[in-house]
Image (cartoon, rainbow, N blue to C red; front, top):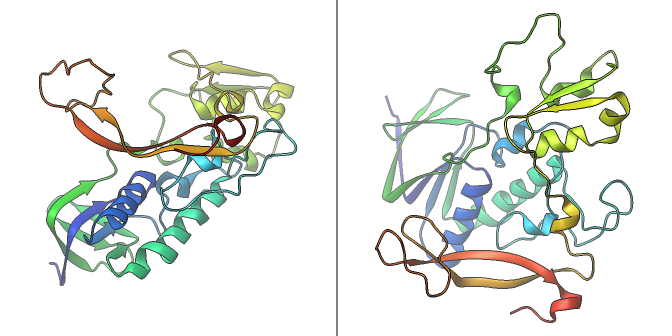
Length: 279
């Protein structure tokens, strides 16, 4: 049975990138209070389970919460990203979210963080360490930030059959292999699979990519500006989105027939050398 009751304007389930961004906006644009519940020991969501050599697939400045920049706006000098803006490592992303929580969110006195706690549908948080039950009450709304959570291969069994004679490991296990295989078969053609299939170590040994759809082909060189530093061209109520979630273009009505609403967003386009000052 619950032994304590906490109340806030918003109860946010999860402490990943989406939850942190939502909380950042709430704190910056209102006087509302927030309770965050997450099963991990620190904020960052799926980054807590990322493989050791993971990096962002986009420049660091494009990622994170609105009030604090990730990275230092420097360019990598070696590797496949040489000449382009830095790509944060998984450890850097985790450190970033931890600092946002400890140095920005908690000092406001409007955020309560319950780490290593499991959220139950009845509105109760259960500590994984002590078993303590806490009843959480949202004056305005419960926000489930796990809705678009990433699925981590190392945390579940595969949905296909693997021949027992074939060594099979999630990407997290590559660094612990005792023998170097003569080749690899990568299952999945998403960001992680594509990066692994084109990395130097896998291509040298021979690698084939198994996928159900076309592989991801957007490389960092097509996302990052080559000159100057990333510039925020727009912060605020600049794009319009429909009630059904579609982005509306100028002069085109919503297909559902309801009025569009404004949506806050942040975009990084171009560079300071080519676009001048930020708008």
